[in-house]
Each structure stands twice: as C-alpha cells, then as structure tokens.
Image (tube, rainbow, N blue to C red; front, side, top):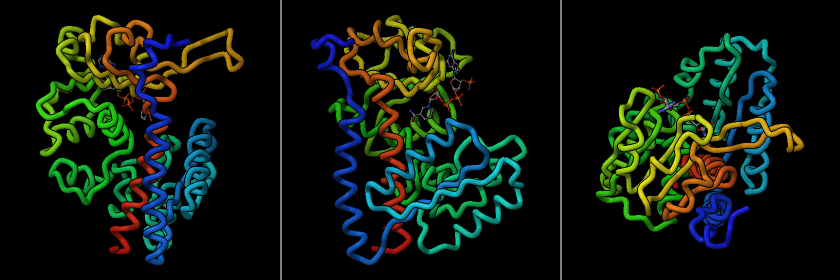
Length: 298
Ligand code: NDP
C-alpha cells in the first residue's frame, strides 16, 4: 500500500490512458464524419494464454472506442505461407488500416519475414524496416512502437523538461530500448540519451547521473535506489512474474525497478501494474487512427 505522501509522485498510467482515449474519441468522430471507420486486424497464431489475453484486450478496446476490429485466431499448425497469405489479404483490405501479428508466434514462423510482408502504411506496431528507418530519419509519417510512444506521453504528463535532459534508457531491444532512445533524441524532443545494456560497465553510477531513467530489461526489481539520483523521473517498462504463494494466482507482477526503495527518492515514478502497461494499448489505438487518416487522406 502506498502512503499518501508517496502517492503524490505516482505517474498514473490508467488516468493518462483515459485522457488519451478522450482525445482519440474526438479523432474517431472526425474520421467517421469523413466516411472512414478506423479498422484494426490482429492476427494470433497458436493458443499461448498471455497472447490470447493481449489480443482480447486490444479487440475490446477497439470495440469500446467504436473502431472496426478483426481478430483472426489461427491454429498453431498455420504455416508461414498461410500466414503470409492472410497478411497479404489484410494489406489489400480497404476496411483495415492497422495490422499486427501478436508476438511471439510459434517457433516455425519466421516473424521478421512476416513483419516485412506487412504494408508499412498499416504497420501500427512500428516494427517494419520502413518505419524503423522513418524513426531514425525523424519522418513523422512513420509508426513508432507503442510502448516507447506511451512512455513519452507519460513523461510529457509529468511536465519534466526533456530538452537537454540526461536520459538513461536501460535495455536496447527493438521493441522498447532502441526506439525509445531514437524518439527521445529526435529534434524537438532533444534529450541527451545514453543507452545501457547487459555489457554496460558501472551501471549504477551511469544511471545515477540521469534526470530521467527508463528501465526495460525484464529483470524483476533489478534497479535499486543506488541507480537513482534524488529527484529523477523513473519510468518502469518491465513486466515480470514473481512467485507469490500468498496470492490467488500464485504469482504477482513486478517491474524492473525496486519500487519500494526507489519511490521515496524519485520525483515521479510509474507503478507496475498501472503505469506503462495501459499506455501501450492506448498508443496502438492512436497509431490505428493515424494509419486511417493517412490512408484515407483526411
Ligand atoms: P528484451 O529481453 O528484448 O531486452 C532486454 C534488454 O535489457 C536487452 O537489451 C538486454 O541487454 C538488457 N538487459 C537484460 N539484463 C540486463 C541487466 N542485468 N543489466 C543491463 N541490461 C540488461 O526485452 P524487451 O525490451 O522486450 O522487454 C523488457 C521488459 O519490458 C520486459 O519485462 C517486458 O515484459 C516489458 N515490456 C513491457 C511492455 C509494456 O507494455 N509495459 C511492452 C514490452 C515489453 P543485451 O542487449 O545486452 O542482452
């Protein structure tokens, strides 16, 4: 339980996501007034329970917002060729503006080849090489991966000045760390970014120089108070299951940050759950609406 003093520095991802949805409802109304209903297709191959839950949540949110939603659940035996054929159908379908293939697909699927087969104009996850290149080039017509986009929105909501700020991004994955760093160093955002990873030396000292620390490493509660300068803004992307025999499910979710130790010294911090998580799906909806506007040119 958080004390009320600590609650004041909590970045509430659910509240920010609610604000985003209010903005998106307005944009959806606008699209519909132009005769276009933004449409998202989510492809799921296999029956991984976590993936199923993510796909259900995306479909539910589309419906709540009044978007057109297609959920394609394919058996684990689906071949690469069959999956490519479905992607190509969706590429050609004018009622679909965003397509994503839920990760991870079964082992026999070449995920990178599937991503390359997506029409980049419908790649709302922002993983296609064309969209990666657009992010590097600072071309705003591209799609930025949803989690870093959500983190940026959370930072903006805290009011922290990013221009010239020292930001340390912990983790260099293509889904979070790298796009996060590229986004923050963009002209107009102008942060000074350091990217750290598993081979980085003197990690606590490096992180402790940061005005903003973003952790995306998938290591439960790894970042202790030694990593955090007093007054820093801390964004915890990590979602990790740890055993908790006392809970109904037998586990609980924790981030990459040791929240109890870091919260008292941070200027602002995201909780897990309820921080970055809710933002990711809201940014997927935002990217779908953007794709619709770009494809229908209004
Ligand atoms: P990856 O496993 O793809 O990447 C992890 C990165 O962290 C790698 O760059 C790795 O370094 C680095 N790393 C791992 N251990 C350490 C360490 N001890 N010290 C320093 N760096 C380390 O993970 P993702 O980026 O996909 O995800 C990271 C976390 O974010 C996970 O917990 C995931 O569940 C969560 N996540 C949450 C989302 C959300 O919506 N909230 C969305 C996506 C992910 P190296 O490159 O050297 O191996």
